[in-house]
Amino acid sequence: MTNLDTTDLDQYMGVPMEPGELKEPVTVNDIRRWVQGMHYPNPLHYDEDWAAAGRFGRIVAPQSFTVACDTSHGCSPAQVGRIPNSHLIFGGDEWWFFGPRVEPGDRLVCHRMPFDYKVSDTKFAGPTCFQRGDTLYINQAGERVAQQRSTSIRYEVRQAHEKKLFDEPKEPEWTDERLLELEDIKSGFIAQIQDLRHDKRVFGSIEPGQELATNVLGPHNLASFTTEWRAYPMTTWGATLKGPTTVRAEALGYTKEMSGFEGDRKMERVNPELTDGAYYGPSRGHLQPRWAQHVGMARGYGYGASMGAWILDYVAAWGGEWAFITHSVAQYRHPAFTGDATFVRGRVTDTRVERRRRHIATVAVELTNQDEMVMAKGTVEVELPAD
Image (cartoon, rainbow, N blue to C red; front, side, top):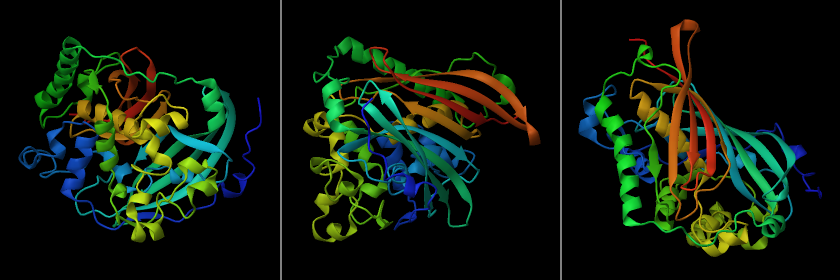
């Protein structure tokens, strides 16, 4: 295994970073835009009449929305330090949720700290750095909403080019019949939400081995990935009170072509398009096939933070509005490329009663594409009402 220069990283581990914060409080339309971008058709989060008849009496954010309150979707503390000639993709997220729901009017401050890293040999890019960092979300009342531990995958672009693991530039073809099959699967997932309505999914009604309704997202395209990107308020010009980072991408070792001014507050006042990841900088590979191939991807690809949201939303839809996700951990193994569909399947693997009579179900979730390639695996723990 050739060396990957990570000597600059050690000085940052365990050192708190500057907090991140958006300028504006959470709005109802922020929440609506989020569930639209994440393809999550739960009326609790966008239909005021449906929400008024439910537990909360108004629209509230899904737990997955927490990441949208950050200015870097959890990435900043997982990409500190310089790795020359490198790029980054998301490798996974672990979440702990503490109780307060995110509601319209909330303002969150995100406290960040790099956690650790290790270097392993991978089929994708040879020597690869798996770096982790923590983001703690605190609301205006000083309450802990959640803690996120993100994993970034940092690698040499040259190595990814040579190995060509994701060398599939042609998108799969979908017949009208296959597309109708996807609609049928999606309808079954929606029916699970509509049938439960505002009722409780009580702990006694479930048991290990129970299958959740399958969901499907896609086929993905550049428009759907753009909708995801724009669902993050941080992507709006002038939206951040404190930027995602205090250093430029080139200082982190990004290649010249993928550096740019993303997140640069000074440049935002001059030419904000240069700071927009949809157009320039490290994020543009998601939405521009030329730059996706530059960093070792076959074609446009989705966002790791969104993949984590798909997992959280999937279990939340099954649990209903009286359920509360307490913990989740997920590994992202294969990108969602344009032209692919993502199938989300889940199964209850354990039930238990913890201290203070908390009734917990564990759900194993797996994401695959149309070729049965495993895209992500996760485990979600959700608290359900006892009766």
